[in-house]
Amino acid sequence: MPDVFRPCDIKSVEKAAEVLLDGGVVAFPTETSYGLGASVKRLQALERIYEIKHRARSKPLLVLVPDISHLESLAAEIPAVAFTLIERFWPGPLTLIFRAKPGLSRPLCASTGKIGVRISSHPCARTLLRLIGHPVTATSANMSGAQSAATAEEVARALKDPAPDMILDGGRVPGAPPSTILDVSVNPPRLLRVGVIDSEDIPVLHERGPA
Image 1: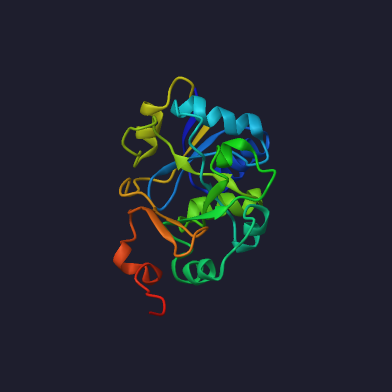
Image 2: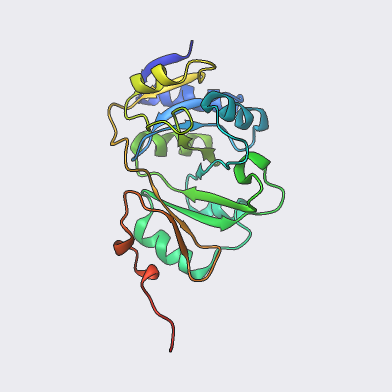
């Protein structure tokens, strides 16, 4: 049984960072829903995410980064349009899809050759990432295909067999809609999922090239 309902105070978040660094899996609040965190450096923990969510291994796991400097360890290329989007929307619920850097663990990319990244605006998630010092997964903490979890209690009820090692309780979060996903590995960028950020609020989707 996971150590549930630990509040997002500094001692609990420090403990969660230790669990992640030791190869564990932690559920934590983000600005959209609760996410399942595993260190990108712990392959066994990444594989456990699929077991906990009952998720198809053909689906990649998006990640959070502590700050923009960590993009270079994940993305093979960071196009200029990405910097424009990052300046406007990060930290926040916009996941950007990049061409993946060669050598990344398969769970992060599956067979897509791409990786999804964002910086969370939730203070608990940001503190956790700062303490870890490298990217962590943030796929939604629910059974695959089910509704996203908006509370720690919902995470604990949904994920039991197996369960995450720890759940940080940051209170209720919106739960839905999820982050908006935009593929910047193609030109022009392609909207893959409409979430919190509406497509009308993303100028690069409406720019027209020269006639």
